[in-house]
Amino acid sequence: MELTQYSAYELSTMVGKGDIYPVDIAAAYLKRIAALDKNIHAFVHCDPEAVLKKAEKIKTGRLRGVPIAIKDNFCVKGQPTTCGSKILKDFRPPYNATVIEKLEQEGAIILGKVNMDEFAFGSSCETSAYGPTHNPWDITRAPGGSSGGSAAAVAARFAPWALGSDTGGSIRQPASLCGVVGLKPTYGRVSRYGLIAFASSLDQIGPLTLDVRDAALLSSVISGYDPKDSTSVNIPVPDYLQLLGENVKGLKIGIPKEYFITGIEDGVKNAVMQAIEVFRKLGAQIEEINLPHTEYAVATYYIVAPSEASSNLARFDGVQYGLRVTKGEKVSDSGLIDMYMKTRGEGFGQEALRRIILGTYSLSSGYYDAYYLKALKVRTKIGEDFKKAFARVDCIMTPTSPTGAFKLGERTDDPLAMYLSDIFTISANLAGIPALSIPCGFTPENLPVGLQILGKPFDEQTLFNAAHAYQQSTNWHRRKPAMAQK
Ligand code: GLN
Image 1: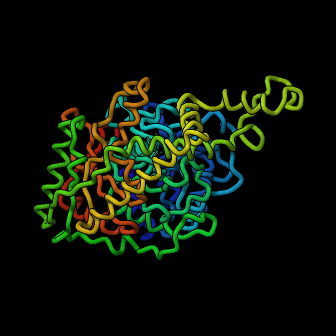
Image 2 (image 1 turned 60 degrees about the vertical axis):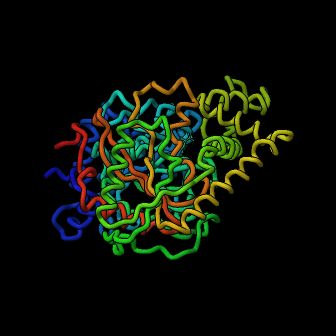
């Protein structure tokens, strides 16, 4: 079997036994990327020589020689880090994100940087200044977003796994649309030091993988307290992989009726209902629950997230790093304000500008109480819904996305239609709870469907165990797109 067909766990085991060498793994993936990524455009940066050199040197670590693709909003020392934006076109960070340090300590090999919506604003990878990524299941369709490059890279077997970030669904929705596993951990579980911020009260880093076992392994490696990120929480990290169980007898699963609404595709609904039946047969107890504030989640998110984004993006002003547009004049001649305006006007794409305007508006005096403050109050209500639900059930199951992968270009002219792609994923970010998406079937067009499992804060283990049990008795996660059959 080609090395690119194994899971990360399998690769690490084979390296551990001395059956294969890290450099052979790296070479196999690089060859595949060189041959096939022109059709997918998952990678925005990959330096094969540097990767091979690193792989030759690597000697120790739990993930020794296992390659990983990194979303382009993580700082990787000396490598281009563009966030999918023109404004960071030539930016190379002088330091590593904490998660990159942790991966390198374990011997993982950074294969390169993968595409994303600009500053993670989007659900299709189409707002990237570097062109869209294509879905490996059907290249006329979007891979989802914003971690579309990460999901497509894993589905296409360009990397055994990838890191993404999730502010309103950006790991889970592309995982669902590309037929891979994606986890948004609990807020505070993973350090975001070195992740370029979108909305600081919502952002979390998480894995995109081929199966749940790999998601458990990667989560154990990247999680934990970090003094460099004051929002990271000092709670011990379980060895998720070691503790991976597969018994769901008596597990109480809540099904919120607010998530089975009109607008959800029949193919998605059917696959999710069948997945829930699998859990019932495995001995879980299925209960209907209510999350009454669900209908306000999208509106709340599109006030909170752009507000924080408008503030976080203020640092891109052409002064310290990234693009500077002066039209030939010296800054002192044309004036600082003029330079800011030209740089930001040219450096940011349409969606980024829209978010900055929306956010600045809802934070302005006179509008703050009516929009931002009100959104925070509704956010609290959404959190309370989950608290009440989790007093009765151990986890909650829903579809991850209301539809399968949509056509490239289909939603680009309609921001609202694009925003609604995340209708089922946003609440977990607002509430700070962990949520996992796993493949659970296909639509009649042969597009993957994802099942979302939401859990109590810091109870990722229950999600892994339930999902692992499911993967032990089903084969959906083993299906591959035609381009990845070999
Ligand atoms: N699609 C959502 C947005 O555009 C979520 C993005 C994300 O999670 N980064 O904001």
